[in-house]
Image (cartoon, one colour):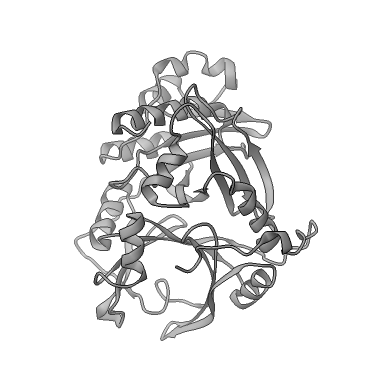
Length: 382
């Protein structure tokens, strides 16, 4: 399938010099999930996560092979796509991976230049630059591959004022009132790759997209008694797009990364972190709508203030909701992780609030991974 392989990076061009931003990114444009039932998924995201259902693509709009719904909240755009039959790449993707992320799309000013600059540096071409057009204007798109069957679509929508992309029509439902939970934007997207492949993809993002290695974690940073993993965070120059990349490390038992790779049947997006300005309010609303979160022992909060210093939030409220806290030189962050959102123990979400911190919660890794191990053990996969 497209995006399933990389070139031999031993012959790829050297990483670009600092300041030579040949791929200026304005942020995440959308995240597309290929799922078994897009209509039901749209209802789930609307009623559990507070998304608004904005636009639709399908047979009624001239696309007979698929059905897609666009759901939005703040600057977050999710596209939920299902096949209309058992044949084709969407059906093959869902059959192999289950519900999962196909496309981490990136907002650019020039999708043609983005494609040309990345592919000449070794990027895997998936979609040649193409101009999409309807009565609302034009959108130029192109795409390259990354780990597994995941792709990056470059989107230039500067000449478009429609609801999303040509082929989509706006949804108007007088009986549906959006009820958002305070999600603002995509903070980062995490990928899981096979043992030994992390540095390969780190180099790919550096050479092909000009990304920098923002932070690295080894198996001493991310480990428990039983399992471990390694991770490197790749970021574009303005840090609007951040892609941590994980690989398993040797441990006594099967790690969460290995469990993911087994059930996803290969590399892919593990979780998407969604930012909020009020995590207490956001998580309270999500819990009230049935969203399940990982929990940590209440003893986690006994020494929290000693570890992270004074914070604005009430410790009892954080403990009641299970929210984790960590500090770095720039400030602190609050975070919490959902359980997997589908049948397979693969994709999940992180809810994060940053109060100056630019890091990813290193001080919470042990508590978080022990919580994941408890769930693995319940599933019989530890």
